[in-house]
Image (cartoon, rainbow, N blue to C red):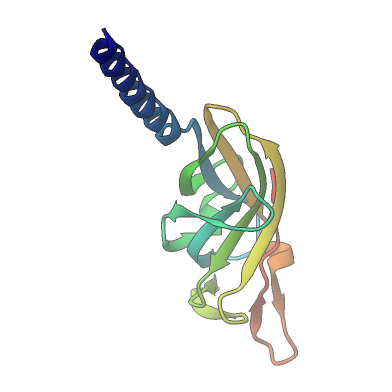
Length: 168
């Protein structure tokens, strides 16, 4: 009888350990989809390269989202047209606090058929406040760029790029 109790104890202990491990490995996530849209601007093209998109939900660390690392013509995404630039999982029921977008340095504007460089600091960055409670579904976060505020002409006649955007 004693051996049977010992065997039952070890069997229950093993089941409990496996159940605990399975529960710890399973985490409910929300799939965050970051989209880009833009307002109008008087140019033929405004091309910007996005190197990475990161999300913050903890105040202390950034999570890299799978980013479509490519050049985007902002003028292709006007009038409620948007495109996905990054996506990735975050813990469900957390609060998405911020989105960080890191741009490349090969950005340009096309005016009167001429491609002109958009001068900027090395890899300009924009950090946007989101403060959105996530649920268990796909969450779309739309970043609306404003080329009018992002592009200026400096004293040397060069076009300067300092990204300005809001969460829509």
